[in-house]
Length: 315
Image 1 (spheres, rainbow, N blue to C red):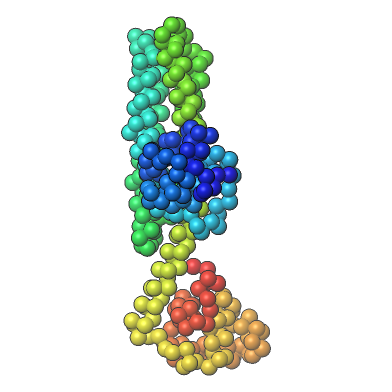
Image 2 (image 1 turned 180 degrees about the vertical axis):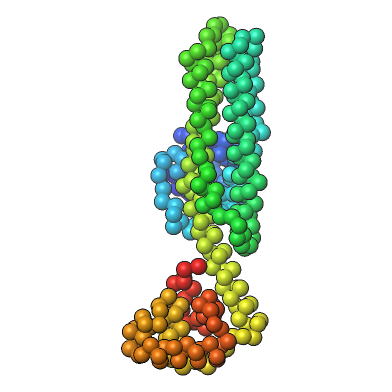
């Protein structure tokens, strides 16, 4: 496990494949013998989040479901930059390597290139969807906005593996494409890069699934609760329909709490040791005093006036 006081050069020396990750976090080379914390602070990167991703990728473990210390803006920047690296540099680079390694006069070579182009199209479509839909949604959450027609679970349900075609391409080349001389060396080097890309894609997907998605779920919950609290206050106090809680008797408040908890009249009567008719009378008086008749309206009233805590309400 790497920590904030470790030298950044030690991380790179032990794990050279972290070099690309530095760029995605926006960390420049030339950090000398500075620690991880010093390097992150110099580059305006959240140290805790950087180390969480690094240690997860290297060691393959971590508990992130309830990790409130992760910085969502840092994660978002990392994923956006990772997409740009892969789409704008890595995929075209592999395409050029393949083209130089293959004899395009051979039919099988043409099929290999076509297969790669299909794979590249699939990856581009997958990542562009995230850039167009998921990332703006997350930025809206960061800005404190609520988006009602989308959530991270919608993304997560359709977030499948994207490296299947890459594995197939690798096996096709190894099994069926004969090479000799220079082309053999070039193709071997290209295969090595394809293997590296397969690892990169798998790690990228793991960071999204195990770190990014849980962090967004927490952000959604916080934003939703904050938004509900603001809306409740606006609705009640701006509309003028809310009444001071003191306008109700203690028993009427008990009835409201029971109603908000989903109890029927008979259950309320048993719970408060009163008759059903008395419950009905209390409900009639509550509606008359507050001019609120719906369960949702009573829930809003109960939250605003401190009769129940918003965290106990299923939103």
